[in-house]
Image 1 (tube, rainbow, N blue to C red):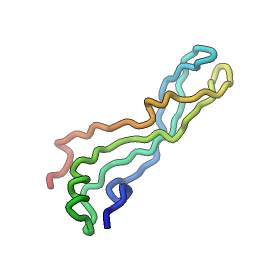
Image 2 (cartoon, rainbow, N blue to C red):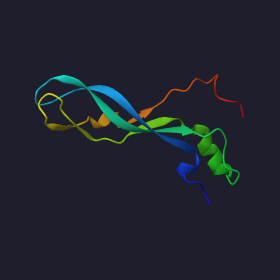
Image 3 (cartoon, rainbow, N blue to C red):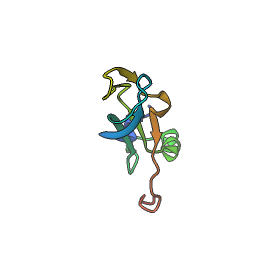
Image 4 (tube, rainbow, N blue to C red):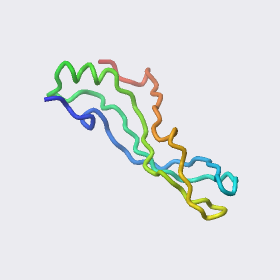
Length: 100
């Protein structure tokens, strides 16, 4: 049986600040946004098969944005956060990663 993606990652919730421009009043403000940070586990579960090993070798750390909209701090209107920033791959220092 193939492993699920959750078996390969550790999940952690984070709040990050980003500057966004309100489309109505055209003013930029900093907003708190919630993200789920998924970091690859150090090793595979013991029940992994060859397909799982190949998939695990290609995996990268990434973040997924939880919030879809924020309320403008100036005009009070709710607006959507641009969707092109809903998932971000993270760079990991290769020298810090343990060798397998």
